Image (cartoon, rainbow, N blue to C red):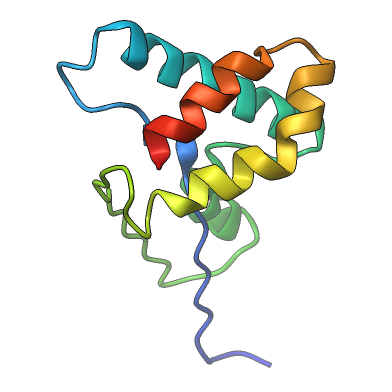
Length: 115
């Protein structure tokens, strides 16, 4: 039946990077752990940029009056927002370690940065 509204939200983890100026060892570790998380998510079929793909996917399905909006959140360690990547990494921890994407020591330091 035509008409109605559809609201879809999805995260886009491509922009999840340390702030500018974080070119030190912790910044490098942060980027390494983010890449490991995306690799582990990708192995499970998740696309880090799926939020960006929704607009085109809806148009391809023939939907009309499609709109899209993006936002970037900035978070510091110990914030509620920092809990999201920590929980994600915790869920993927064994997969990342088994695939040798990161070491346990690196992952523990990443957790410390988020905490």
